[in-house]
Image (tube, rainbow, N blue to C red; front, side):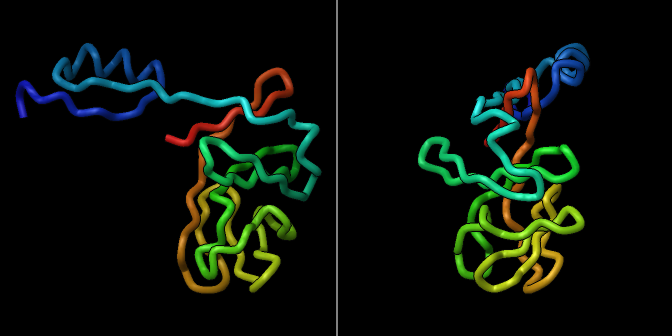
Length: 130
């Protein structure tokens, strides 16, 4: 293992600690991409954005913004038009439900959709695909 650089993603505080404790690990910073304004996402609704040809569904519920892969794990249909209830989005085509925070399927078949880290700064929504 010595001499090989392992690449992991970490916050700045964790990077500083890792740099001091594990000099053989190379830490890659998480990169966020500005995708829209918070006001562009309807409350208890969704919106689709494309990043590098990847379709991402953004949802807003109780003032918080969430990002999921915009493809139901059941049949590949888009999730951005689904209804939001109890921090879950329901696929508008087959009624599978996914947790907005984790992407875990809570009703349907138990398959996940990818969730993405989100941060909001100055009214702008930024997500990381890493």
